[in-house]
Amino acid sequence: MIIETKGHSQKNAVQNTALLFFPLSGFADDSDGRVITSSLETVDGIAESVAVIEDNGRKTEASVKARLDEKCDEAALVSKALFLAGREHTGISPAWGTVTGIRAAKFIRQKRKFMTSAEIAEIYCVREDKIRLSEMVCESEEKALSKLDGKSVSLYISIPFCPSRCYYCSFVSHSIEKAGALIPDYVKALCDELEEVKKVCDKTGVYVSTVYMGGGTPTTLTAGQLDVVLSKVNELFDPKLFDEFTVEAGRPDTITEEKLDVLRKCGVTRISINPQTMNDKTLERIGRKHTAQDVVWAYELAKSKGFDCINTDLIAGLDTEDEKDFDFTLDKILSMRPENVTVHTLSVKRAANLRDDGDSAIERASLTEYMTEMAQKRLLEAGYRPYYMYKQKNMVGNLENVGYALDDKDGLYNIYIMGEYQTIIAVGAGAVSKVVNGKNGRIERVFNYKYPYEYLDDKQKMLGNIARLEELIRETL
Ligand code: SF4
Image (tube, rainbow, N blue to C red):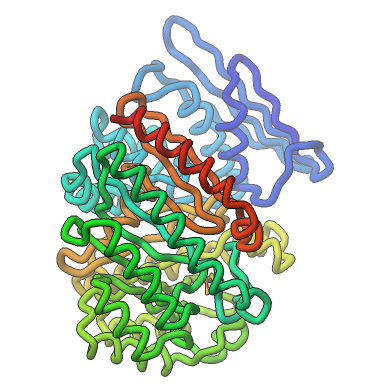
């Protein structure tokens, strides 16, 4: 596809909008027979954008006029014109309109400071139910943000190991068959890095308010290894200041009574037990080495140990599942009534790996959208509230992932990291620290080595990263 712009330089906005209707397209040439022209002209203070789609001999045109201001800027106007043309041309009407960024709730929260919901719906073509969803998420965010004081940070501990690899996995995670021998050294290296983080906290005066051990599957570690890392966290940082302490137990085939006892002893307040689906056939097809019954077993065991905040991750649009399969999963999960339910959707990258073309990717997206709407309806009816949300990059249908919570059980770390509201210090292989500077609005990232063997081989790099973190944190104070 070729994109031509006239009278403006909002090519990115035009490309992002074009991808809503022609997913998986490239912009290098017109070998797919498509040319999109987007123009902008201002006469007497009124701007008009015209979008023309020429698609293998078929032509569709749309235009919009507005006075450019804070509410409707150039990017918004050219995107809207193309959105209207794309909708007419393809018959597809993406629910999030021209809001294509990952942080849709944050975008709408910022716009709501000076725009009404109706204005957002009108200018960005967002469906009303998505604005309502964003508003509910914003309410939860407000509560979580009130806990931040400019001195608190989150601590992320990366455990990039899993018992085996799921076919849809897009993380850097290593099956223990291949990388298990590295784990003892990895545990030691993590403790060393945590010691260095502690020094940064002491020198700068920041403190850890939420801890999140994620992966991978952290419970791939033995009970003893978990004990070493989590006890180290408690020894170095002040657990009385922790608003939340999460460990992703992830796959039930890694959970044992002994490990749960260690998590309880170390003050973990929130765990994940992730079924993805409660259909055994799908679990087998996607390479998970456990059954739905194993999920129930692990969940009940964790409850009997006193865990009162358990998250379950589900995936809508997984493999060959249809509405009935997804409904069955929702039935099972709602009967367990976990405090958090996170509904994910598969990304277009995965669809591409399944060798879909754009059209079948759109069909898949529309089924997935139906499933996410079904999940939202059923979870709201069951008393859950959406508390955080993000959209995956390159998601077909521009769909969102949503975390739902009962009562006041919102996962704070999820809110902070997704909204980029708080500095996250991340340790371990594949970890990326993010320093949020409230003074200038900048976000700086510090990248650890991606793979465990690199991380273990170069302690100097870790020390260099820690020094950089300290420098960046000082700038925020
Ligand atoms: S459990 Fe998660 S991180 Fe591990 S392989 Fe599966 S999808 Fe990837």
